[in-house]
Image (tube, rainbow, N blue to C red; front, side, top):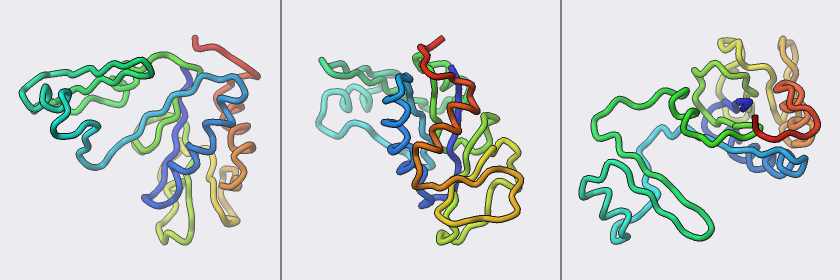
Length: 171
């Protein structure tokens, strides 16, 4: 399974770009999964639902299954947060795993950068950033600058960087 990341400041458009890349990559025959880092606590169920009640009652893991999907919630309950590698190890192997966030992980990444956000480039301090996707020209970078609105070209770059070939099944 190839792993490729999108990094950038909040509001730069990482999620928007992933949503545009998914049909590009899936349309080319690749199986693609995503993983996102959250900087805050989150819930995927709600009070009053059976799964929520199981979880707050003390269940270590709660799995919900229906005809169209399943989800597994794992409560840390004071345990150390798992490493990126451990989380990736829980994923079903696919051709490509797109990772949003996890800036410190050592997979190749595109930095999503919008000068209008007013934050500095991450690329200067992260040698795993292999390109920058921006809505403006940025001169003098040692990596390619890609048009953030051209998801086809960005998909081409990811396919080439990850050596995915034309089509592939998870290996």
